[in-house]
Image (cartoon, rainbow, N blue to C red):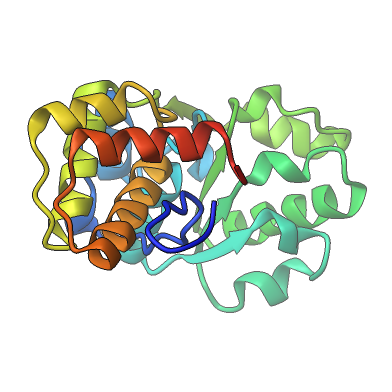
Length: 231
């Protein structure tokens, strides 16, 4: 949607991955416990898996900040050699690592990267949408490495947690919303942290432009904008 006073659901969010901004919950309790156990991980590797928007990237960023790890995106695996990607780092967070499965170049680079970290006594955190042992990897040696890695699931956040995330995102923008409006939004928008951040940004944009408080009617317009993009 476009035009004065209309909600733009795709308004780019500003999402902080600082540890202080992470909202814990039952869905991430086991994952957080394993990050706290670092570096006592099976084979020095840990797979953190779960659905899109469940907070994997936030937890990976927290771990990288704690350990001084370098962050490597899966898209870079097919474009650069492992020594270039990690430099002198002894620890690495490989984001969306499952997306490199099936790409021979990306698989070779990931295998080399894991070997380099192991040789230096380092560790690797790999994020993906399923456990590493289930990734459709063609390289046998890499498949073996991944099968030997620990794997911890992070679940889809529940409505209570999503409401807390949305409330915080709005509070960061100096916006206060009634609980019933929060409940309305979290039961109708995608159940992801990213969706809550986008919703907060869109509501902030429109409330500022219109000089209005955030009401149920405004929330309903946001839901309609998400369900009917471009209308």
